[in-house]
Length: 432
Length: 179
Image (cartoon, rainbow over all chains, first blue to last red; front, side):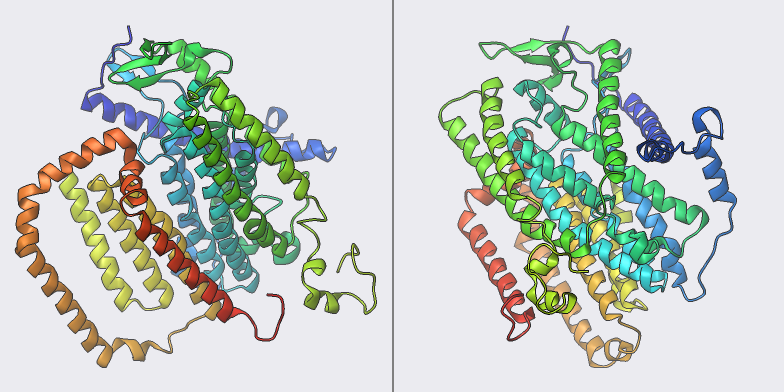
């Protein structure tokens, strides 16, 4: 009971390979069915039917789309920089498919040869690996925009690079609050810390979750932040000149980013594979044994992995990730697109200072709690929840439409003079 | 296995560095630079310096080089300046710099530093391994940074802030009240 059998190198490599193939396949399948879900959900929101001809409920539509994309003609613009034009989609898809590797998707699975961690690679830097690799995603977009030799594609590429760099800052700062509370950067340990706290981090760190949600939307270039491919302004932005499978690769990359971001939100803020209100699934490696927690005297409570718990936690993780996938689609078909200067304004002048202040607040509260000798547990979490709740309400109050994200004419008198007739009413009239 | 990976990363790093210098266009040079930075990050991982590797990719490849790419594309640099860089006094200067650097490195590693590494390297590595287990991959860097070197760290932050303010002041159009 609780004793741990380590995998031998042979089995470690074998299970590693199996996990790589399995996770890659599942992510790609989810990506394929995200395209169908997006079209069906958008149809539902707009009171249409959506694609329902290919197979029952249109379930074979992604396969038909895939075949179509592969057999379509590839176009190559005559004036494009050919090498970079081909390199662009490849660079775009690479970071998108490897970032899922560090996300734990279920409780450890017991096998006759030892316990297998349900994570492709439990690297010691965890979340930093995701941040580092997703910061490379911008190269694919910028290079394809530039190599297309098309002004719309180029503008899309420039917008993408500016936007992704800007929101990387806010994303990183919102993660710092989680790192403060978790005390480590590996995602396995973050799940464990949430189980120990008895509260998912979305409660004690509610404002960080809001920042993370907004920044993740911007990083994946989804509405309302799809400035790099704003159809009404830039045709389709950086992939205007692409066709067939190269075009499709940008979409696979985008949806893979959405899947990773959803899984990340579930892991960082919603307990990962943790099943709520049930301590029986809590599990962590502690000095060579599996433990479920610590009792009053601080002695570890042993536990042992089981197949049933693995399956249940996998279901919990899938449900949470699925919810965020749906949320992504929901937001896309609900909110209108920002104007470009509003995107930059929100990123640099609202999210950045607010996230910095929030980190100070959380760090200060934690310092006070530690000084008072409050143990890491329910009370600790509830105090932070109260502090965060008040801050979140204050933030939402100040990010009121006409206080912070108002029309540019109120912030830039120089431009307003051009856009508005002389002597026109100052204030709420739109500038266009 | 580790040796094979090290040689692979080393070859890509050096090849990329050469590519930066002899690249046909600024964009090619930049991508070679990214390849070099990524390979160096790979070498860091082989040395189990995971945190440094992540920061290397995150800051250099993911942020600074993207900014370079941004500038190159905005200025739309072509091929017309090539003659300035490739021949003449620049190549002579670069030879001198490379020679001096190589000399200093060889001097260092053949002398006291090299002997010291051979003698105490294993013990130091073991100490770091123990610290990683205790504090985590980030804590090993963060702990000394925010205790022993906190003054230097804050001064660096101040220096960067001054640079940012200076850049904003320089970029601001003259005579306008609001940026």
